[in-house]
Length: 64
Image (cartoon, rainbow, N blue to C red; front, side):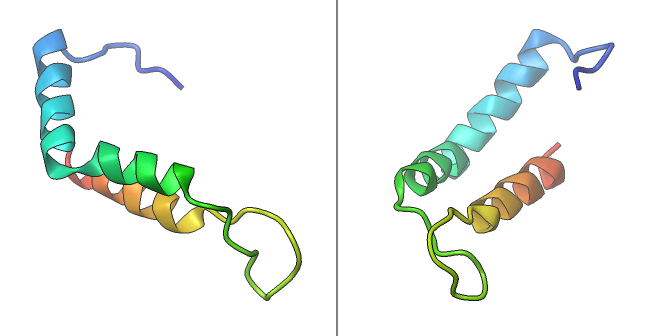
């Protein structure tokens, strides 16, 4: 969902720069390139990416 009133461009730029300096983008790229994790419970196949997603969302919410 897109906001109706986005912040000014410089605010978005500053926030992006903070996330780049904090290593969030590098961590996200690294985690996305990692091999898929087995699903919880030890089943076969599947990709559980909930760990990086939780970390990423938590950081994004805390940093705004």
